[in-house]
Image 1 (spheres, protein in one colour):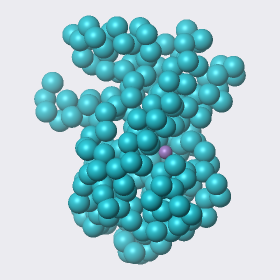
Image 2: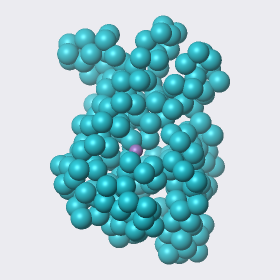
Image 3: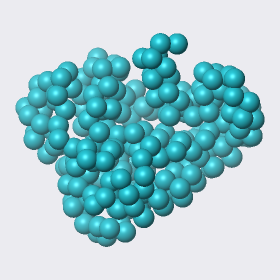
Length: 239
Ligand code: MN
C-alpha cells in the first residue's frame, strides 16, 4: 500500500470505525477480538486535551471526548448488536441510507451513530495553532461560492448561531462538488442528505458551556482559531 492510500485508509477508518480497520489491517488479532465484541470504537483524540487552549478548554475536551463521544459509541454498539444484518457495515454506510437500517434501531443509529461519526470527524478538523483560511482549490471554491472567506465565515457563523438548541453547522459539498453552508439538529449528519461534511461546528452546549456558558457567539468566534484547514482542504479534494 503506498503512502497516500495508507493515509486515506487511516482517515476513512477514523470515521468508519473498527469494521474497516479489521478489513484493512487484518493482521491485528486484537482488532478482530474488539470487532467481535463491539464493531465501533472510540478513536483516540489526535492531540492533548489542552492543545486547543485557550479557545477550547482542556476540561471540555476531556469530557466531550471521553464521556460524550464514548457514550455515542457504546450506545451505537448496543443498537447494532441486536441486528446481525448490520454486521460489517461502516458507520458512513449506515448513515448514508438510514431507510435501510431496521426500524427497531433506526433512531439509535441516527442519534448515536451520527454522534459517533460527527465527533470522529470533528476531532480531526481541529488542531493547535490552527485557523487562518484555506488556500488552493478549496480557497478558490469558497471565494467563488461566497464571494470571499469573510462571506463564508458570516454564513457559517449565522448557521451556527441560528441552530435552535443542539446541533451542528456545516460546510458541505454535494455530488456535483457544490459547496453549501447548512445546519442539522441533534446528531443528524449531512451524509444522510447525500452531502459530504467538510467542516463542522458542534453547537451542543456540551461543546462550550464550561468555558463560555450561554455565550455561543464567543465559542463560535474562538472556533475559527483552531480549524485545521489542511484536513478540510483534503476532504474537499477527495469529495
Ligand atoms: Mn459534541
